[in-house]
Image (cartoon, rainbow, N blue to C red):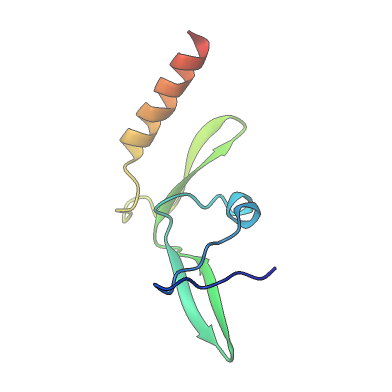
Length: 86
């Protein structure tokens, strides 16, 4: 898979890869130079929310996470379910 760097130095991670890793807006990645390649991996020190069996689950370092407003995300999920069931 080939991706292109834009004028600001940004790259887009393809949707299939984002979905497979549950990467959402605001996700933190670690970037490391290894020989002649760039390695991106999920930052372990941050919390991320995923859905398992229809239930929202927080994963990672929840106590030291400042990347996700958990209450806001849960309220949004509840509101979406209410709209669907109405």
